[in-house]
Image 1 (cartoon, rainbow, N blue to C red):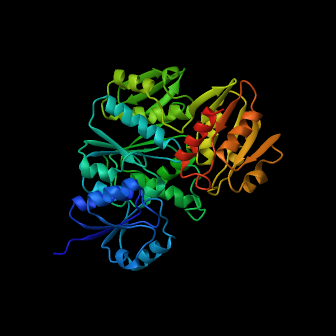
Image 2 (cartoon, helix red, strand yellow):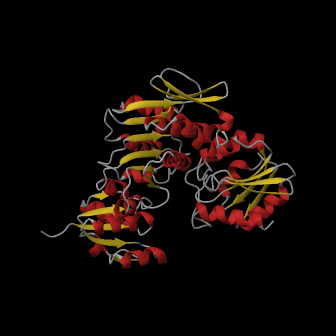
Image 3 (cartoon, rainbow, N blue to C red):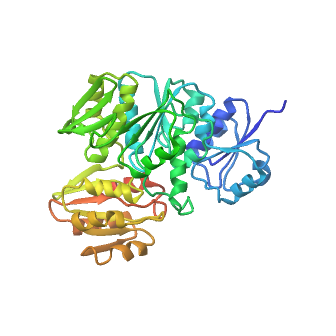
Amino acid sequence: MDKKRIVILGGGESGVGSAILAHKQGFRVFLSDSNMLSDAHRETLETYRIDFEEKGHTDESILTADEIVKSPGIPDTAPIMRKILAKGIPVISEIEFAGRYTNAKMICITGSNGKTTTTSLIYHILRSAGLNVGLGGNIGKSFARQVAEESYDYYVLELSSFQLEGVYDFKADIAVLLNITPDHLDRYDHNLQNYVDAKMRIIRNQKTDDAFIYWVDDPLVTKEIEKLKPAAATYPFGEKKTGQMAAYTENGKLYIQKKEDIFDMELELLALEGMHNVYNSMASGIVAKLMDVSDEQLRTSLSDFKGVPHRLEKVATVRGVQYINDSKATNVNACWYALQSMRAKTVLILGGTDKGNDYAEIEELVREKVRALVFLGKDNSKLHAFFDGKVDEIRDAASMTGAVEAAYQLARKGDTVLLSPCCASFDLFKNYEDRGDQFKECVRRL
């Protein structure tokens, strides 16, 4: 019988990982990318002798597929996707594909904000506890490639709404939903419910012996839970103890409850600052207790975690001004959390590719905490339309060098300069990492 033909759409980390796994499973594999591949990815495909094309899609090579594994960044509106969908070829995500070939337990984390921090913290806790655990999804090495080349008992996976769109039979043994706020609405026809529906796919296929951990204070999440009635055992967390809470705060302490067992820890001993990070620590702690990590080990891991790059990352203090890189804040809500945690007057660097943002969410914090705004982007008209007249000093910059120079001039001793852009980075940078790295480089040159 002829081997099944799998076409991989997109040649980034996710696509190349999927190609390796498909090859190892004995499928006929072809990878196609509309852009140029990186040298490392091209070399990997050549090493595995996997057929590929770059700088364009060939219809005949793609539309003969039995199944297509699509990279998360490719929308269904892309011309090649319209042809694929018209032909009725099944399209899945890397997560769905890789999940077929491993019996490892899946701990999956989603939410509009806090995903990377929480995923990294859970991984840190479990690894420190001596578990054989892999880290993947929207972070680090491709999940599919790890399934092909490694052998883990557990995976901690950060899952974006884009990745969850292509999930059908995949199941999370433990699902974590941190929050839902408007994001990527340009991808979802500017309809918030479409985005919410994608996020809620994280509980798809869960059964009664699985676990679902969620933030009880999020009205969007609680409304969906009432509607969908998850099959899994639920573990809500929030700031105050109400009803059957799995985690809450009280008198300066974090509490995590599992049946009769109660874990507690002083909030000031947590490695991560800010209330949003208390929630991230709660969700991570619940996972740890479900997996029988000892109280002592959990306390150690929650207090010695180093955080993640580009998320409220302290860069340097120059002439009494602290510079903080929060380039990962690619939506308004993430910037809200960053501003909320600022203790000093702030010069805020905003801007980039707008994803249908509503800046009203941060208006009050901007008025209260922000001394000056620096708009960094090719088109700052929407930012000007909203913020002009609300802050005394506003400057425009067309490069990171210009933005940091402007912030340096505007900041006073004791202030903070915060890069927390609210927007995607693709107008001036390769990605948010490139944007954050350039910020750090410019700050170090001051």
